[in-house]
Amino acid sequence: MNITVLGCGALGQVWLAALLRQGHEVQGWLRVPQSHFHLRVTGTDGELIVQSVPANDPAHLQRSELLLVTLKAWQVSDGVKNLAPLLPAPTPILLMHNGMGTMEELRGIAQPLLLGVTTHAARRDGNTVIHVANGTTHIGPVSDAAQDYTALAGILQDALPDVAWHDNIRAPAWRKLAANCVINPLTALYNCPNGELRAYPDEVARVCHEVAEVMARENHHTTPEDLLAWVWQVIDSTGENISSMLQDVRAQRRTEIDYITGYLVRRARAHGVATPENARLYELIKHKENAYERLGT
Ligand code: KPL
Image (cartoon, rainbow, N blue to C red; front, side, top):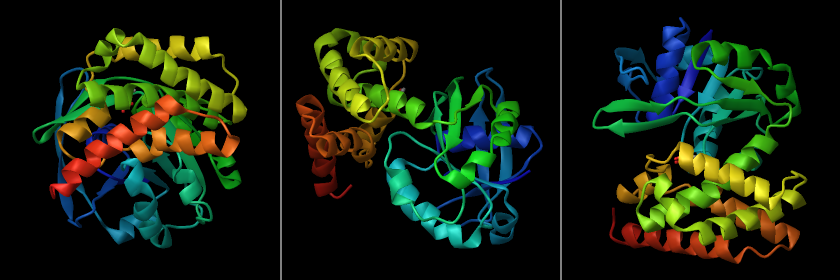
């Protein structure tokens, strides 16, 4: 299959390596155009994959049967809108990032749109990407035209298991959003690995209860207790991880807060639900971001 991966960060490189291993004809697409880039990924089994991968070839893009987008949430809208005119109208676009809100920004795009939610963990170590932990990827349609692309789940499953198809992808996306609303801002503020949130049970519960209330208004039924139990499970199973938001804050990069807590707070406002704890965390992370942006980094 011809595939373009837009965004060659840690997760993008893990997918590129997996798809290449499966024999797909893959290219990467980078913000600064280059004809090739150097893939260096250490798998969960410790095997190092080093390969030169073609990049930014418009002819390959025009032949692509899938555009896999692994950009940060705040880069997605511009990135996809730039490439969409070069991409055949029937080629599905699969968005895989933390948070929600990009689907709304891409409403009206010609191509079928799908959303992916993954628990694979990867991080950069110098010029090497480490695939830290295997996980599950849930994919499903966002636009009506994307409902016919169930076969994609099988193709991706062969490359990087586990992959599950969901007719209603918003349900797993909201559960992942709940975990991100709790873990990402709190670890960024306390500067700690995910597992150390065990020291802050009251804050974890308050954030989680607010998310459960908004989810109920969005017709995703869950009890606050169930959601909290699930979030603790994610905290424990990723205990040694440095969350993506803490990594961003440490590197003084823009975080995905607008698409995680920011999205939650916007949906809460639309339903008339008060979310003071999430609003407080949103402000604290924005304050951190603004402080280093003001320093010109
Ligand atoms: O998705 C994650 C992230 O770091 O962005 C979690 C689930 C919190 C794992 O670290």
